[in-house]
Every structure is written in C-alpha cells, then in structure tokens.
Image 1 (spheres, rainbow, N blue to C red):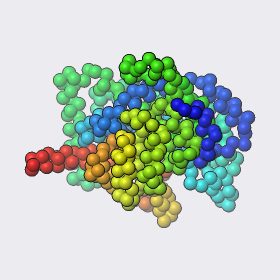
Image 2 (cartoon, rainbow, N blue to C red):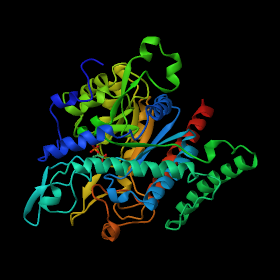
Image 3 (cartoon, helix red, strand yellow):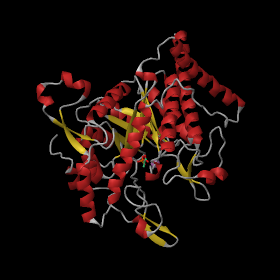
Image 4 (cartoon, helix red, strand yellow):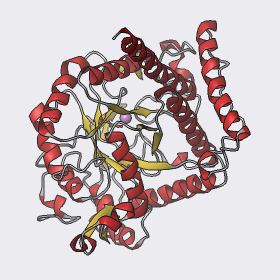
Length: 471
Ligand code: PEP
Ligand code: CO
C-alpha cells in the first residue's frame, strides 16, 4: 500500500483528538501495548470477511449490536452472558424471518471510546472536558477525573482481553447451545394480539430446532455454539496503531489460490477487534482516521449521516477499498426516520454508479436521538422501527440489498428508549436509566425489534409470491 504505515495517520489532521498532557505516560502506555499479544487473529478476521462477502452478495444478514459506550465495569459474567444470549435470540428470529444466515457482530470488548459533539461541558458551574469513554477519562464530573489518563489505554486492553476471554469460554462451553430451552420472556407484552403473534414465532423457531434434534440433524458443532465477532469504533488511533501488526500473505481460504507474489506480501491487521468502524464525526477524506483505515485489512464500517455528500461517499470508498473487494466495507446509514428518504436514495444511486458493492447496514439509533422536555436523552421505538422499515423499502425500490442492522442495546432491563410492547413512557425513563452515553434498547425492546424486522421480511416474501402468481 503506497505511503502507508500504521503511523502515517499522525501526519494528517485529526478530529476528536485526545490531548494528553502526560506525554511520558502516553509513551509508556504505547510501549507496553506494543509488546502485548493481539486480541484477535488475522485468521478470525479472514473468516468474518468471508461471511461478509456473502452478505454483500445478498446471501446473509448482519446483526451488529451492543452498548453505545462500554464501561470497564461491564466486564462481568452476568452482563456479558446477557448480551450474548440476547444477540443469539435476536439472530434466531432474524434467521427465521429473512431465511438467511445471520452474522453476529457485537459492539463489545473494546467499544470504550466516544466522540463528543462538545469537547467540554459545564457541571454545576465548573467547566471540564467531556467524558470521552473509559479508555480516555473518568465519568465522574470533576476536572481531575476528566483529565485524559493514558494508563487507561492499557486498562482498556486488559478489559477487552478479559471480556473476550469470557465470550470465547462461554461459547465453547455451550452458552449458545440450542438444545437447552430458551427463555423468550414475553410476559411484558400487554397487547394480546401482539403476544400471540410473538408466541407463534417462538414456537415456530422452537419447533424447527426440535425437528432438527429428532431428525438427528443437530449433531454438528453449528447448533451448540455460535460465532460472535467483536467490533468497536476505531477512534483512539494511538491505541489502534499499537495493535496493528503485519501478517504475511492473505490468510484464510483465499491463501491457497493466491499468486506467489501475494503470499510474501505483508498485510496489516488491526488486531484489537475483528471489525472496526469510522464514526460520522471522523470520516473526513483528508483526515487521520481515513488514513489509518485505508491501510488495514480488517473489514471496516463507515457511518453515513445526513451531511455526507454522494460524491464524497464514493471518494471515500475509492480510498478505503480501491480494489473494490467484496465484504470489505459496510456503509452504516444513520439519518433519522424523518430524513432517510431525503438522503438514502441518492447515496445508493451514487454507489451503484461507482461500481462498488458495499454492504448496506441501517443504524436506526443515532439519527433518532432527542431530549425530553426535562432534558433526558432518549429514542422512540416507533422512530427506530420507522427508519428500519424505510431502509428496507428504499433498498428494495432501488435494486439494492439491506444487509444488516446496527443497534445500541443491552441485555439489562434498562429504561432508556420509550415505546415498544412494554409501553415505556417518558415518565418511566428515570427508573433505570444507566447509560453513560446514548440510550439503548433494553432486552425486551431489542427482541421485539427483531420480531418486527423478521416480520417485514416474511411479509415481503409472501407478497413476492402473490405477485409471482399474478404474473
Ligand atoms: C456510535 O455508534 O455510538 C456513534 C457515536 O455513532 P455516529 O458516529 O454514527 O454518531
Ligand atoms: Co451511540
């Protein structure tokens, strides 16, 4: 790759930069991280890329989800298990609905850093740096705690490692084993008709699993375990650089068919996680983040908001994926339910005309954040669902494929987003509002969203059949 090194981002302008006063501490953290083993391997990343190639070709779907801001405190057995189980259940419903394999990518084991719209905030008359995530500074609202502390970068590594270790251990010990009955927890659904609909879906999923068992088709590793890949926003490039390591030749199934010259070529992988994305605030063509991302061989995401110009989007694709490799780039659109119809069609058309075939994923969260009259940040379930439904319809109408959804969710019973079958209102938000950044769907709202999206796919399949018969 011409003129690229893991450090070449340093010569470019940087948005959302963290200004460390303690430069010696920063150098110590960097030296320490450089020596530590990678958190994931190029082989695992290559496996994910293979899966994503199928998504780009319209043959599979991606479910990406997790916290907005992961905290070091979330690194505990219960919270990790709750998140894995939720992702697994949602993926089962989506497999049933879309009739396609679902690739699970969690925002976990590294999703610590946050971009902020303002670098500072004033609390009780004291102005201090904003909370930038557990790997940068402390949440506690004092100037001391908000000072960027480089030793947190090393702490982030160890919390990511411990989280990932438990995910791997839990998966290999059968947490995803579909032989054990699943608790679908539909008690909260108040409307009988909706409850009945969801129960029909879960019993259909359960019946299929039972059938596989009876027929002896469940002996393969597939039903006892599942792959869950990790992802985070690649924001703190000092950290990402230390875990970006060379690997000879492309790994995985592509290796056998590679020309000899390619086999000796060095490819760089950011081994802090499987999938990384560039945020909507750091995607400038001439900026440090795009420079860093253009050189890594991981599959990457780019957030696409309402301010993205269609030609800028194509220019970005040309920079990060000049060879138009399938499965390499996921465009994560996040316009908002009231804006998607104004922006997505032009973005799809520009990308189609460019000859790129990225994965399109809908993030129905970040364009739908609003504040209640009393100043609590929330999102409405109806707006989230509306953006998802419109994304699906717009892609269909433009001969494009919606390959995934990207959600902020938690396995806990929090009260952060309003709406859904549990009927959470603004008055109920303060009950268990525990996010340190954006409002997340709770376990029940997340499952419900999966039911509804699965329904969109099913309805479409039925409609397509009716249309076929009409012809
Ligand atoms: C996020 O995904 O938490 C985020 C900050 O998103 P965006 O860059 O789209 O605003
Ligand atoms: Co967020």
